[in-house]
Length: 115
Image (cartoon, rainbow, N blue to C red; front, side, top):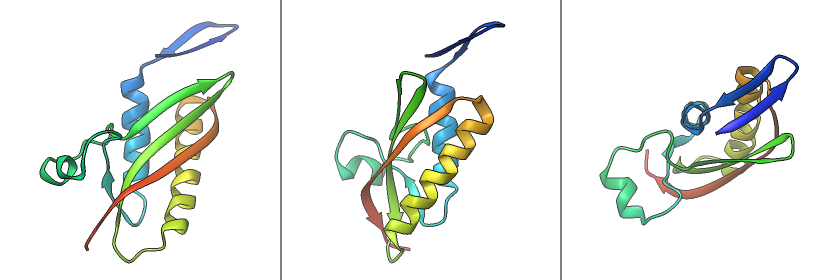
């Protein structure tokens, strides 16, 4: 639960909302085959459908959010370009939807799938 206090009162945003928001934004980027669970083996995410909220961890450091993403990319794409694109898109999406500031977006590539 992320709590934000301002002159109007306290705003609480659930982690489930953040995980779905971030997972959806990241999975819509070119070259992302899906989200990977942050724990477990590769067999787990190959057999089961991957939910967007898996592989997303949100922390706050002072007034800034730190977002950790675990993704699976499509084979043959430029990974550094994908990671940069995801960072920008996730930061923009979260800041527009919640008015909270994102300090850092860490993207971990956990796997690669053929096209």
